[in-house]
Amino acid sequence: ATRFGVDLEIEFSPMGDDGPGHGVRLTGHTAAGARAVSHESINFSFSPTYAGEWYEGRISRTGLARAGLPTPRSGALMTGMLVLRNSVGAIVGQSEPFEAEATAGSPVPPRADLRLPPKPADGVRVVSWNVLRGKPMEDTGPFARVLGVLDPDVVLVQEWTSSPREIAAWFNASVPLEEGQWEVRTTGGWGVAVVSRFPLEPFGHDDLYLEGEEDAVRFAGALINTPVGYLAAASVHLKCCGTAGSSEDQKRISEAGAINRSMLEALSVEPVQMRIITGDLNLVGSRPPLDVLRNGLDADGSDLEIADARVLGDAAYTTWREDGNAFTPGRLDYAVYSGSVVRQARAFVLDARVLSDRALDAAGLDATDTDASDHLPMVIDLMPN
Image (cartoon, rainbow, N blue to C red):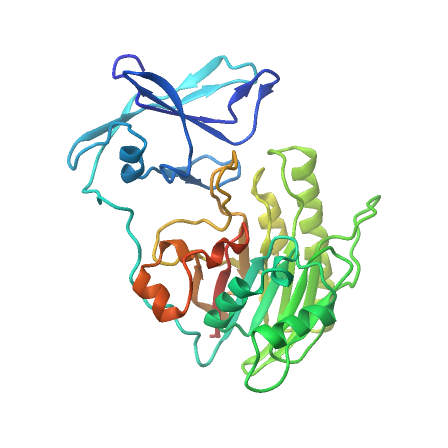
């Protein structure tokens, strides 16, 4: 690396006194010496957040300039190198230096000047949102504005710890319908709920437990009678934290398997064709929890399809972020649906920060509205094939 010099060093699971730590550490190197750089200052992110054979990352050149680091001009070559260290910090592998040509940059961070997509007339709009420990009950405005603009038919929430009656009262007061009332189903799983503008009934177990566990799996399912047919919908929230192969990762896999079996059992009694599962999967270890969850659950016996939901007006797969956190923004929330009978008319994640002032004014949103939670709302529009 000394052959070409280092301007920016990015360390994943940076070494500490007790071995590898958590998150990402960035260090800028200049003539004045080395200094810490925050990941949010250069808009650094990468995907996926789980163990894999490939990763894609990005860095804002506008952010590099603001941080006082060298910024490649359009057409200039950027050089990089990857180094792999073991648990005691010794180098055990490295790549050859690679080069990439810098494209034209922007003097200011770009913001998308677009119109929020309306929901399809002959489909169902589902919104999934982890609302940060029941935050809507104490900070109504941002959540009400976002949900009002998105106009969902079904809302699958995580970390909303209120009772079904309280959640329904909040929706009816804050996001009122022109006709009818919102209906809500919760289970013994902490903070998960299905909220619908259409009639719903229970689907799957009320209380789903893993062997030897005192707390119920965070899973709530409902059968919803929509204008385009019955929809089996579930909100899930898998165990957080850990690494690939850790006890937390193993618990995520077990939870996903229990939810999958509960859905299969319920579908054997009510073979509903349209199906969707969404929520906070906390995929920070391995990928299997996602694949175990969707295994064989489509109407034709195949796996449920993974919704392709990127940030609206951006190219990033980001559903979670927290400024000042050691972890960089990432994709923790997923939606899987029955692709054999419905198609994804549209899927996106709403981040008000990336929208232009004109787009925000047209939508009736504030730039900070989606900062109300550390997770961003994910939208999936489904239409029957």
